[in-house]
Image 1 (cartoon, rainbow, N blue to C red):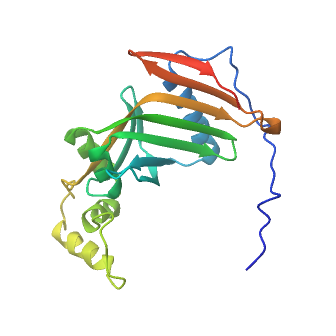
Image 2: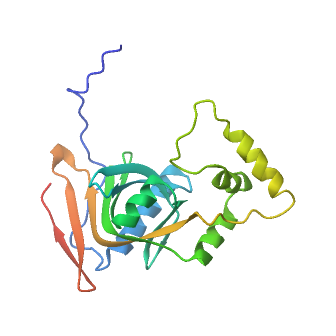
Length: 214
């Protein structure tokens, strides 16, 4: 096994800083600004983030999902409603989301309540997906245990024939969620680990902000 020197690995951050004298009252404005920077930097449409949920047994679980929209209501992502994350959300709809861009030395941490969006909104997004992705949504019951020799292509072929020459409708067990943030922290890497951090929190419908120590 190759020897990897993690112990002595170091990197100093010095690409940007937060102007604490020029911050919006609504953190979603800063959130959208940073997302736009990330999209421009990566030249990709998808914005991945780590979504953390807690099960009925108080066991945390994290996975990477894709941010698909930002509206006044919050942050949107889509998944199978039979998945592990969805089952966690059914018993505890308070989640955490973490966005990290190493090249930009930026991180955003979000905590909030997550709820299913309307069927109509889920239908609109599902219709925008590539056809193969639509068929995959029908073919995979996410988080279900499979035999090692199970061939998912067989199921894809089955649904491909079923929806031959017609639109693929959205499965009832597939759709979107919206995270309604009540706490957002912006982290900007700075030299000597003296990072810039600004934290917003929602109280009685109003956003408040504070600078916090690195």
